Amino acid sequence: NVTIKGPIKRFWCNDCGVTSLDVSKHPNLRFLTCNSNLLTTIDVSKNVELIELECAGNQLSDLDISKNTKLQILTCSANSKLTTLDLSYFNTNQVTDMSDMFIHMYKLQQVTLGENFSFTGSETTKLCNLPRPSSSDISGANGKWYDSNGNGYGEVPLVSPKIFMAENPIQIKKSFNDQVNQLYNLGYTTEQIARELNKSTTEVQIVIDMLQ
Image (tube, rainbow, N blue to C red; front, side, top):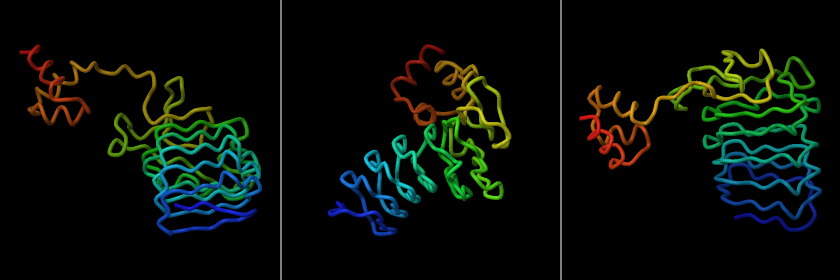
């Protein structure tokens, strides 16, 4: 665990095996680089002067940058547990290079963008793009990003809706009973169906008994 003491504006701790990092007492911190560690959370809500945040290659499941309105560099790639990312407050007009922003974020299921978000940043040559969501990484994904109206896009950016989702939000999903029935007819065992649908074997067996 790392707790920083004393007034600082820049902190670097790449590849140090850090599991916890407390920067809450440093409102004047401007540069924070903590790539390739074991961080599961990082609270930067008090660091309102932050210009650069690099936290790639950790185990983050959440990242709140709503208070960091001065950010010019954000790198949060290769966080395999990060499934949602809210960039509503991120102003890409201040960013010169966005090419690494979403690299290796294969588990990302939802991205929320704000009025000041552009996939080109302030230099059109520094384009970023969302990786295509794959069914091998995300259940229900089919290689497209969807907006809230169910419109799917194979390449992003082509348009900029406020929210992108890996799974079609208006797609009619099969009921649990139908899912069990389909897998059972394909020869799946009770245990295999339970694992596939992330349910208990008891729940699955009840449905199977009803179908017979």
